[in-house]
Amino acid sequence: MPTLLLRLVGPMQSWGTTSRFDQRDTGKEPSKSGVIGLLAAAMGIDRDNWVDLEPLTHLALGVRHDRPGIPKRDYQTAGCAASDTIIKADGSQAKGGGVVSQRHYIADAAFLVGLEGTDTSLLEKAYAALRDPVWTLALGRKSYVPSESIWMENGMEDGSLTEALGRHSWIATPRKGESPPEKLVISVESNDGSGVLKMDQPLSSFAERRFGARFVRSEWIPFPGEVANVPE
Image (cartoon, rainbow, N blue to C red):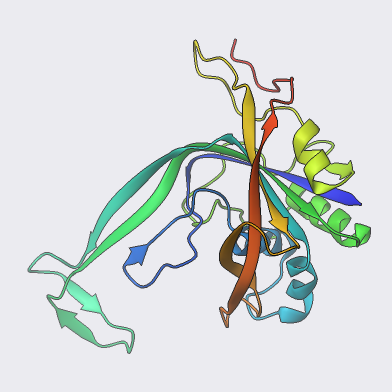
């Protein structure tokens, strides 16, 4: 069964699943809704287009934590100065009533993401789109741009999700004086109901924003034994 690999590396990433209004969360790894949204942007699928989005939601997701990243919080304000005017959702204007927003993210993370499915042509279309995306790609939020290409050379693997994640070279760049880890964590969708429950399975277009449950199982795997990025 073919597997498509993506490289998600950047100074800032955010993969929230429970964000509401001025409180924006992030998970410790890319969410399925976020990764599917990234593919949809690459392929030019509109937010209200469920027909073209649905096949992507049937792909199984796996994540390898090559560099887990550091949890951070961004403190933002809007309209808190006495002279500020806030434009409300209905278009009216009001003075005062500033908004304080807590926006969580993970810094300096590197994830190898795999998507497995039986539809080889769909994966090949997604793979081509990642190299020449219709819309700008981001790591969870529009301002969080990747520092390396999400598209990977030889990113189409002939093998299962676990096999592909287990044998691909390490994508993180070692810091000065740092040794590669002895083992890595992978998180893969579980079909038997075991693992952790996550509410990030898209059930509708992104315009409707309906999400269901899926189970994710995590395990340690040996370090793949090859380092792709070595500092000079």
